[in-house]
Length: 294
Image (tube, rainbow, N blue to C red; front, side, top):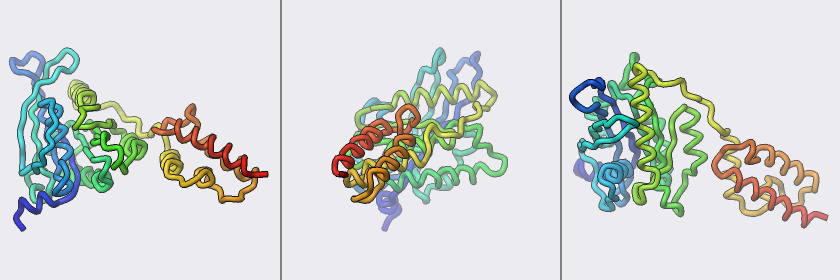
């Protein structure tokens, strides 16, 4: 098998790293951001999400034909961040292990990282920790990941039928680490511009603040228990299962289970995506179950 064949058939992840230049406002040239995009194809039949995102953002188009990133692709675009026009140099890097020695040269002095995964590919989401570990290793003992802007990009949200990583799971992972989180579709363009504009603005703020970002709020707006409960309710087979009680449970047992879920998921208290629908489902499940209890 050739190296190209190995790359095309290798399943995996994607990462984007962005470094902002240090040109002063008085410089004759535009302030520059250098963006490095890393990742690799998930399979021989599916599209590489990060490259599609780049095409959508820079060229305002969706590329349906699959082509693996071989080594590095390069592009340039200009963006407006508040009152500043900034030139962005984009480096689209392959994420296959074969290109590790090329990829690791772009971690040094990086000020922004975008972690991209396909919401329909659980392994790409599970690999986010691997990308963070690789970056931390290559930055060395003197590298400071706390002075880097991180964005987590959940891509392909248009493919709702194949989604296996829901918003609550992705958002919880990002927010628990103080990272920004966006849901996007390279095919429709949904969320792409907002994500990049927020990303660039955050990097500009970091650079204007001496390379330091505000201390992130490491506590997520909802808990893992809430996210897991919403997922369980969504996948429940019937009202009994939704409440977490066995068929034939007493009225008191049903009401006790309902109260616990109501406290956990009430929309006024729970900010997890899907909490309102889950709460309504629990209310309806309780009503349905109690009708069958004499």
